[in-house]
Length: 98
Image 1 (cartoon, rainbow, N blue to C red):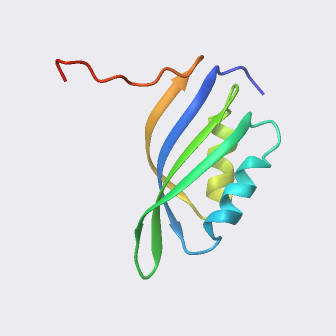
Image 2: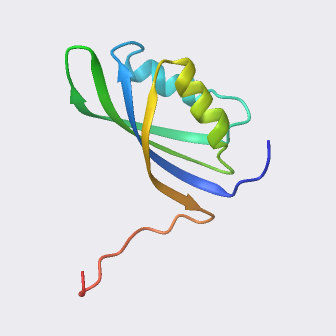
């Protein structure tokens, strides 16, 4: 595994109904050499054939290649990467100008 310094990834993902969300999250947390310490999956949209989910992954030196390969193996399609944080997690703070 190469050092990435990525500490958080947030992705918009399209998946079939199987595997269920709890199985998907366990599969990701158990990925060897991925750097994952925690996974949060939120169901955004549900239709007859698919689910749109938001996956937030946190850890140390997250390996995007390993994570995306596992998602692909589980029939998931990454639609977008919505957030990447490297190093310390810095929360967005709204300013008066926002």
